[in-house]
Length: 420
Image 1 (cartoon, rainbow, N blue to C red):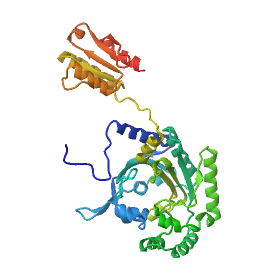
Image 2 (tube, rainbow, N blue to C red):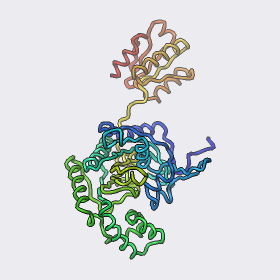
Image 3 (cartoon, rainbow, N blue to C red):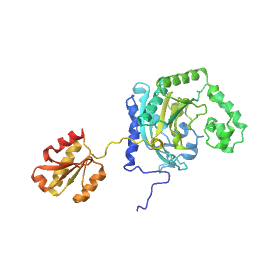
Image 4 (tube, helix red, strand yellow):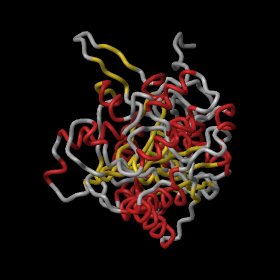
């Protein structure tokens, strides 16, 4: 028994469960790869100010949940709590907005960190796949990302998720709504922290999950009633494009999301089979974020989908993913000569794209065949001195139990033929 355990609120991905996580990541990424998105990878930690400016100093992420630390050189860094600010920082640093057509379309996959109270579906270390389209203000781009996420979920077999959609307005109409909402919130019985948050960013109060707060928000002014004509037209086009693509959604006038950088389109993917942690992903437009972190005006939109939450959603629906076999052929040598010959055949099979494994450790036939069974291999190759003297190996079909002798020099071609 090891002295050490995984830190509280984290988890290890180990076989065979890890194969499901890999399959989910691949399914989410596949529609992006086919839509012009290129892969980007950023460091696991960034300057604290990147998140304070971008995510918002009044958000729980920055005030309560961020893992921040000071390096030996005196730099203030933080483990990344989300992906958008890092991806935009990297794109600006590399001048991607200057070297190609806009929008710059990027996707990423990685681990993120927030100090939260651990519970099912909420971890301190979690995995996401995200997509960002940087440098274009176009309702079709917002619709594209929502449609691609819907496509990814459906390709996995998920059906019981809902898409919530809202508009948060822009710099023209949101200040008017902000003032009206602040006037409303000042009249409520709220604690000091919440009142302070209301003065910094009142929309964040709408996202407060406490029942005592939500009860008081009945009758709060809604942003949709304050949208300017441009934002109304933009939002209506997003709705029309999504509908035309056959994607169903629900209008949610109270949907805010937990980050300060969102403007106009905001959306969330929820699964009611997950209990209180029902959000499996979400995103929206963030037209002012580039300026917030020192860049030029680059209207952008993106989303992040939780791999952990998606796996839980699949379990809630009882969806079993069809995962490729990790091993198709297992070789069992009996004796040193067979060990040399079969190891060479395993190497050749792998070079030809066949998943193959080998009975290491010099086990006897009984023990090696147990390993072959556990591997899930469809076929097992067995060979001893007598077989090799006759120029053959024994090929066993692990499903039917049928065993046939195949020439040593023909075994690779025979397995390729049988496995298709």
